[in-house]
Amino acid sequence: MEFTILITTYNRLSLLRRAVESALAQSWPCEVIVADDCSTDGTADYLAPLARDGRLRHLRSPSNLGQCNAVNVGVEVAYGDWVKLLADDDYLAPTCLAEMSQAIELHPSAVLCSVQATEVDINGRALRRTPTIGPGRAFYVRQEDIHYAMLLEALPFGTPVQVAFRRDAFLRSGGWDESFENAGDDADSWTRIAQFGDAVFINQPLSYYTAWSGSYNRALRIEHRFRQNMRVKTKLHGLVDLRHRQGLPSLSQVDRYMRLHWGLIALRERDLRTASKLGYAAAWSPKAWQLLFNAQRFRRGDFEAVPVKRSVLIS
Image (tube, rainbow, N blue to C red; front, side):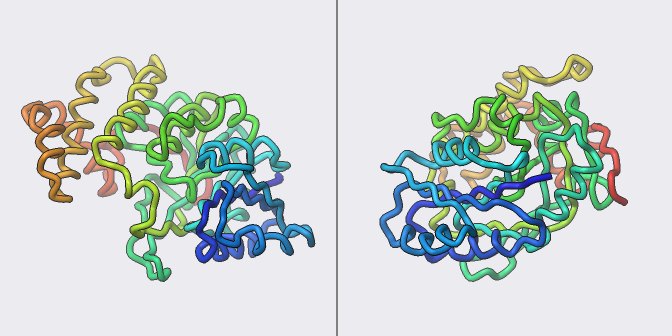
């Protein structure tokens, strides 16, 4: 099995060094590509000697075209049959690819693989860890169950630092959709890739996600994030397998749940205008509260909140 680590970057040289070092330090042999979205901060000078001696490939865009374009261009030219994404402000544990490879080889029909992440601050201090979402050290979920579980918040693949995908499935899916504008582009991609195979999950913290004020997603308005999130939910609703259709919440019920969810986030962040706009009508919907309660049960480790079969790969 061949892996490519694809690092996307734009004017974050101080953080990029850490991401590159973590990619080059992998215990599993891999190709490393840095897709540079026309940085002007010395990134090219830093990467030049690494590219000359063959440790990585540097793809520099002629102009600033955005992260989606960087991902699509990088995957297109990757040599690996699996691609591990990595943003410039995140980094990987040295055994990340080795653990992924072991689990994937046990379940060749997988097209997606996700690991736990440790959230760190800008100085690398651990803040929290994403929860385990299934049994064993590694488990898999069949293709026909993925979209149903994702719709009901019971199968979070996580951010790009947690996820690897099979390159051919990514290309068949059409790549990242630039219209998402940094909000939901990753989840939309996992949704479409999952049409072509199963998913493997590894209950080990093998990636590091940096929570800081410069994160692209944190700069987006809550209402925009809600709209993009709902676009993904609409797509998921249409892809749910027939065996899960009976009793499936309607799309309008999912919309009210999403409004309640994001309204509560706005309230927590003291954005009272957005909280009222999104959450007021949804707050009167019993179904919205039920869906929210079930999602919270799942996050606390109650996997029966949304009954989807999770089969152990590595105990």
